[in-house]
Image (cartoon, rainbow, N blue to C red; front, side, top):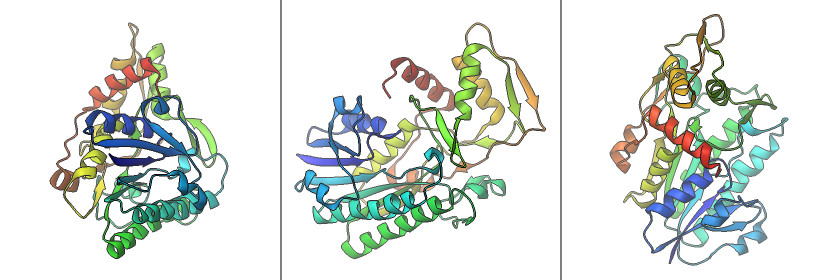
Length: 322
C-alpha cells in the first residue's frame, strides 16, 4: 500500500487535511500523520506517529518502503508564538523541514508538498490588491515576524535545491489566513496572546451584540476555507507535473462589510447585531490571491463561497471535532 505522510497533522489544518485525503484517496493509499503530539480526533481517523523532527534517530519510526508523498506543514507560526523565541523558526522551519525533505529523498518518495505563509508578500496588498505567485518577497528585518519570514523563504529555496539535485517532485504553497473552526481562537501580537478578530465578531454575532465596523468597510480580503486548501493539496499530490509554486486562495475579494454581515446573518440568532461604523479605527488588511497557476496546472476550483464557508464553520463548531 502506498503511503502519504502528513507532518504537522495535529496542527490547526492537519485534521481537515487528513480527513480530506481519507475521503478522496483510493484504497491503495494509506494516510499517516506525524507530529510531536497526537490530536485526539485525528488519531481516531488515521495512524499517527509521534516524533521530534529534529531528532534524526526518531526517523527510524517512519516507514521506509512505499512512501508516495510527504507533506510538510510543520512550520510554527509567529501568530501562535507566546513571547519571542526566533531560534524555534530556525530549528523547525529550516533544519526540521530539511530533515523531512532528506527523509523523503532517502525513502524514494515520489513528491514533497511544502506549506509556507504569505507573510513575505502580504504588505504588497496595500499598493496592489491582487497578490501574484511571482511577486518579489518583501522583507522587514526589524519586527517579530522577520526571522519567521526569512526562514520560510530559505526553506522554499532549499526545497528547490532538493528538486533540482535529486529530481524529486516538489510543490510549494503560499498560504494567506486560512479560515477554519477549532477550539484554539487565539493568536499572538508581538508575542502576546489575543483572540482572533473573526472569532470576536462571531461571538458578538452569536450573542446579538453591537458590532463595530472598523476603518474602510470596502477593503477586500480573500476568504479561503481550509477545505479548499485541502482540495489544492490533494490535486498537487496526484498531478502529473515535476514541480509547482501556488498561491492558496479563492481569487475573490470579500469586502469587510460583507464579511461582517455574513457572520451576523449566519451565526446570529433572532436578535441581529447592530452594526456601528468606526472609520477612525485602523483598516483591516486587504489582498486577493491570484490562483491562476493552481487553476491552470492543478485543475483547482474553489468550492466554498464566503457564506458557504461560514455555514460549514458553524457545523464544525457544533461538532467540536477540532
